[in-house]
Image (cartoon, rainbow, N blue to C red; front, side, top):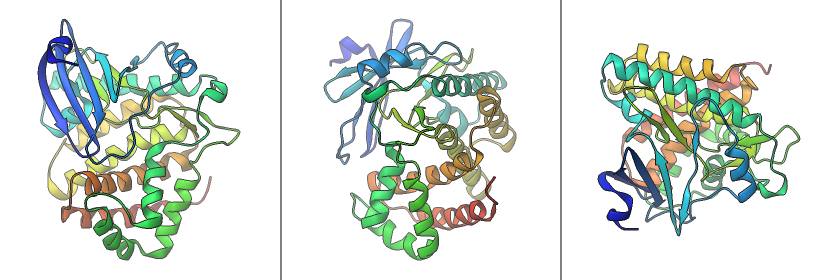
Length: 309
C-alpha cells in the first residue's frame, strides 16, 4: 500500500519482530503492522466468527480490528501515541489523566472480551503465542539474533529448578481447558493507542487472539508495569512511581473482579521473561539482559513462595 493511500507518514518503529508505520489520515490515524525481518511466522488475523464476536464488544475502549492486506495488518485508530510512549516520557497532568482514563477503558474492554462466548471451532485450541514462543526457545536455545547467547546466560542465572518451573507455567497456558475464555492474546501498552487530550483510544486486537484462562490477558499487561517499575528503580527511566501506580490501578479497577490471581501473577513474570527473549532475538545483545535475568529469578522465587489460593 502506498503512502498516498495510507495518508501522511508520521513515524515508524522497526524491530526484527515487528514493523509499525503510523500515518495521519483525515481526522484519525492508520497503524500498519507487518512481520519484522527475523520473524518466521506471519501476523495472525481473526477468523470471521471471531471477528464478529469481537465486534460486539461495546464499552471501555473499542477493540481496533485489522484490515488484512497480504502480510500487513492495518488498523484505523483515533490517535498516534501508545500508552507505552506516554509512560516512557514525562507528560503533562492532562496527558496523565488521559492515560489513566484509557487504562480504565482497556481493563473494561478485556473484561467484556472475556465474557464473550467462545466462537466454537473457529478459534484455535492452542493458547497465546507469547508463552509458546518462550517455551520453544527454553527447550532448545535456538533462535535468531542473540537468542542462543541469552539461553546460555540465563540457564545459569535461573538454574534448572526455576527453568523447569517457568516451562510448566507456559504449558499451563496451552489452551483447551474447560474454563478457557476468548483472549486478546497479547494486550500490551504498545498496542493501547491513547489520545493524550481526551483519553479516547483503541486496543489493537486480532493478531494473537487465542483461548486460555482469563487471568492471562490481565497478567500480560501487568507484567509490563512490573518491567516499567524495574527500569525506574534500577535505571531511573520512565514514569514516576505515582503515575505508574495510578495507571496500573486504573486498569485493575476497569477490569473489576480479579480472575484467578495465580494465573495473573505467573503470567506477569512470563511477560517480563518473554520481553527479554524477544529483545535478544530481534534487537540484539545488551548487557542489561543480565540484569533482567537476575530480576526474573527473583520474580520466580517470589511467585513460588506464595501459597496456592
